[in-house]
View 1 (cartoon, one colour):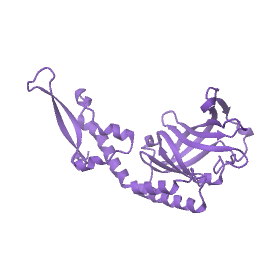
View 2 (tube, rainbow, N blue to C red):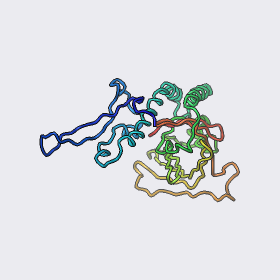
View 3 (tube, rainbow, N blue to C red):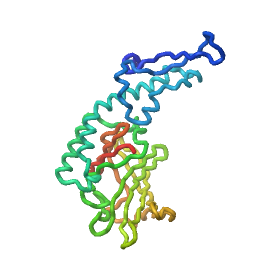
View 4 (tube, one colour):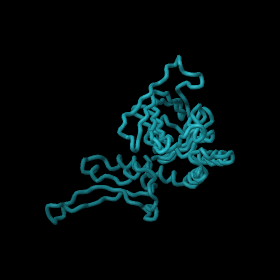
Length: 286
């Protein structure tokens, strides 16, 4: 195991006086403190890393080896410093897609700038290997950009109803919820449906449930299961509507019910994917 002295944190003993008296008897514990106070100003990028940064005193009380436990925390500290070095490239990418309404307002020039910024970050991050680090997919991710939405349809690069043209549909937030244990992969879409005056718009959340599997080191295959539509806002008391998967024999050839994409970059708070129809997507942890 690499020497802990090469890390930006140092193990120091903490001695707390016994609560029973003011004698010299003490109980020892161990904690992490920055070797350089200036470096502690760098905040950890994810809530997971922030939780691991404070080494638990309870580990020493329970008899857990402090050195063994530190190895996991030290790895996160190194990962955070590495991620910090890529922050300018992440900022460049997020700036390129800012104001594009998830890609709905993207012009051809916007598409090229976003793609170029994404390629820079992908190159800096290097190859992704989810076979040994699949836990990086875990969580609820917010979509901030999809190149396919420049088609102005809900289907993106796949067939789907138009937005703001023939149908009064407004696209809200879009999320991906991934559970690496159950293999659940849900696309969650918030929509606002226009209603005749003077009725207010109808707000709904559509959850497209999938199962996923890892193909190779960074490619993910998802298989559609069902869609659940739930009204929100003033109509939130209505029960959800569940739409099952269309049988394969009745499914049009353009809709196979499955799809694949490659994770080309991922860290604690940012993820880039490229789909099987050349769709670029950028997510941030929600």
